[in-house]
Length: 445
Image (cartoon, rainbow, N blue to C red; front, top):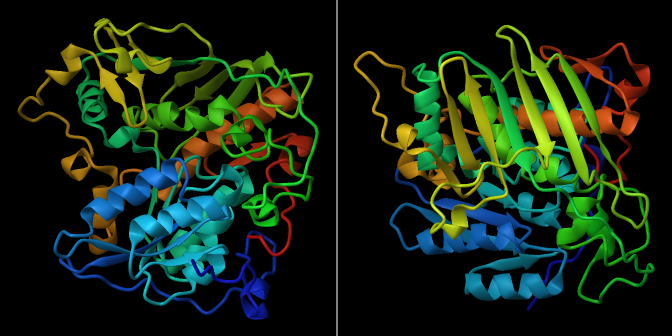
């Protein structure tokens, strides 16, 4: 297998890879508009990050590549040689392997890129791809900081690319039915949404730092994070339990469950006015995300409360024969006339029969629906029609901000005030400084 070199020789990309924010004075590269595609034209894809969910996305696209006018996969990229070798074997003839994503996104023949990398890469990857005129599917959560989220929205708008965030729960059939049920007033006025989820793990048996495995490019795995020695507690999947790279359960499943909550509450582009968190942070090992936590978000105009709780008060799925549906997470929508339970919230989303059997009455309210309840198809249609996708980057960033702000409130030990219009923390200079963090050159916004 021939793998493209890890580093770019061309300095121009590195010099112009930052997006101007506020008073910053970074220069932008020449605008590269995304290529217009006809309704029946084949979409050429690149995949960055091909383990875990990345492997699922790749398989989905490969299953579709024989459909006329659908998709083809031209390139795959991963910092792990073993995963990369497996992926290129699946793609077969015509696919090119890369270790460094920058070579892939500069290819003029690639229309769109699927990013399924650790959270700390999402902002940089999406912004750089947009600058190269690529449409983007990026895994959730959209971002790790407020600064990243704002840069992602600005990049998508400036370069006119279609972005879909991988909170696929809102594209599921039962999510549509729950949304329809709530929007048509079947619960009355919903004033409170309570989410539950099991706790994050603790690193109770720490291991010493070591050399990275030979197949892993540790420098590229870290990317924008500050340099540190490799430890097998950091990755692959365990990056979730490190605040810098994963943010814990709230930034993982919270980005699914609270995605549905904002969507159902018609609050996609809004945000809370206050955030207050209590919880327990580990005292040993490398994992530093909350084990248990409860975050209370207060929204205004209309007034309602969202609660994220680990563990909260789980609601068992009523049919014990459906073991897959015995999810350890979900949400209850409390109205002044009734309540509704939605289990799961990601690729498996289920709700009560009263909602699944509900039909919109004449003159009733309709709600967004992904074609064939397919999150990827919704993205494809958005690329070809120019319409906003069901989990577009602005919606995805607003959900990610809930996760980010919940963690900041916990770490600072106090309630935060938030301006949902300017999307800034108010009256707390220490907290405001934490809306951004340094990034390691050249992996910068």
